[in-house]
Image (tube, rainbow, N blue to C red; front, side, top):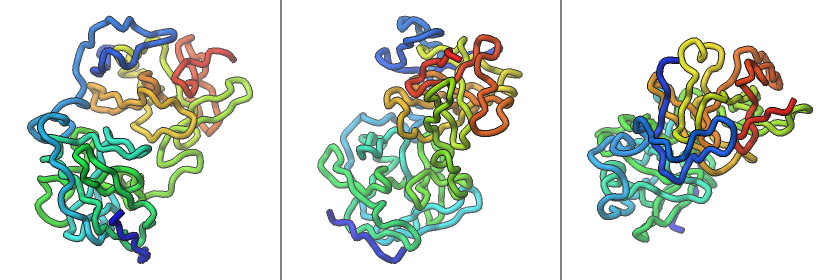
Length: 312
C-alpha cells in the first residue's frame, strides 16, 4: 500500500436546496416534492471550497505530495490537530465518505484543496497507526486517508500551524488525531452514549427505538417542519425551548439516506434525519427523559428512519 504505519505512537423559514430526487417527504408534515425551494444552501457551490468554482468541474488534479511523518499540533482555538512533515495542516471534507472511503473533491475543488498522496505516510506519535489508509481517486492516484476520511491540504495555508481552512463552507475541518473533526469539544472525552456528540439509537419501554444525541438526550421532530423543501419552522422563542441538534456523526441503526446538515438563516447548522430537522427539549433533564413527547400535539420523538413516533 505504500503507507508506513509507525509504531511510535416564527418569522423566517429555514430552507436548504436539495436535488429533486432527495428529501421526498413520506409522513405527516411532508410538503409536495414539486414544491419549489425558496433559497439555496451554502452547502453547494463555491462556498464549500473557499475558492472560485464548485467541485466536479474540470479535470481531476490527482493526489499531490506525500505527508511523510505526521505530527500532532495543538491550537488554542481548535485543540490538537494533524499536520504533515512540513507542519501544514491536514483537512477532511464533509461531502466525502469514510465507509467506504471516497473523495468527492475533484477539478477546481482539488486545486484549492490538494489531495495528500498516500505514499510514505507515517503515523504521528500518540495516534493509532491503524487509522492510516488509502483510497484510489477517480484518476487512479492513491490518496491518504485517516480513519477512512481522505486527507487534503489547503492552498491558503502558507506556513506551519496555519488553520485557514478550518470551517470553510461549514464542510472543511482539520483532522483531530483520531480522524474526527478537530475542535475543543473533540479533544474532550467522548460521551458514553455516543461518539463525540453523535446521534445513536436508544430503546424506551413505550416509544421503542428512538434517536438520542451524544449525551443520551431524546431527539424530537416538529410536525410543521417539512423535508422537501427542508424547512425548520421553529424560530425565535421556539428555539429557546427546543434547541437545534448541531451537526453530528451518525451512529449505528440510523437511516443512511439523506443524513444532511441544514444551514439556517440564523447562522446555526442543524442536523437532519432523512431530511427532517431535529431538536432536543429543555424540559428533558437527564438521559432517557421523554418529556417532550406529544407536547402541543406537534412534538414527537424520532424513529431511526426519521419518522415521527406518535404511539405512546
